[in-house]
Length: 243
Image (cartoon, rainbow, N blue to C red):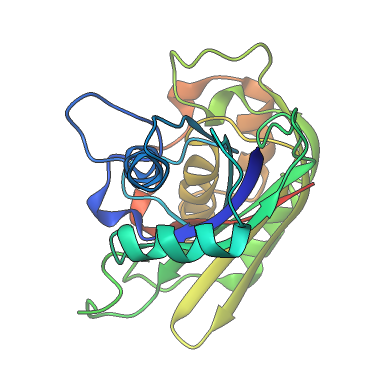
């Protein structure tokens, strides 16, 4: 029996999604819980590999169970066993060949900036504190430069194995609510550290240290050494995977 799992998690205490020897991961917690429930090892496949410290509000995963199990009961059993910073939102039957990564049409990420002169006792795990004033108009002007199909070689982690560095960005926009600026981006797929590097480049524009045109120049350069270091992981959320 194949099932689709939709879950959310706080990635602060985890070394990302993917199994890693000797490390605490989201995939590892899920597989341990499923083995306790079903009495046999179960491999879980996710729609994407979020990095250490990155959060998710709508991660999608799939698993083939060794025996039939009522989806609602499985959700209750998993939530009873999983740590409080991982929550199963939905369990539903899936076709036998459902692949949460390859079958996805697009993914939506959000990145949060805290724009105030003092640090926050509550936001430090969920945003990047940027104390200098940022111009939302400049940020949105820069964000529009990413829309469409481009080569994002300058915005990826060097050494990552990808057949192509071209990606199609569907939506790219900033919104401010009080002292939090949130960047929301949707694309067919993303390179590793792509969103965080895009954010870092746009923050340089918002600070007035780089021009809006620098975004286009970085895309055209395809040179990772010209782009800034990725923004901190804590501000990044996988919001939704669309099928």
